[in-house]
Image 1 (cartoon, one colour):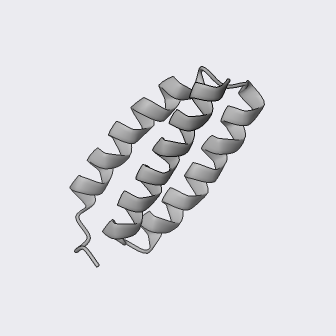
Image 2: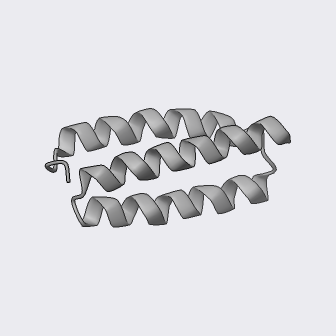
Length: 73
């Protein structure tokens, strides 16, 4: 497990949010809202547990999901 680094976690979160919010514009509003809600829940748990590995995995997973869905719609 990676050591908790709040600065790194916040930087990663900000970078991913910029990308997924841009990709969300390419999705229907209902789908984008549902995916953003899932991301918020997942990243919230990772931050609360102060688990850097989980933060990285959640960000990567949701970034890939948004990219894949934005390419299909």
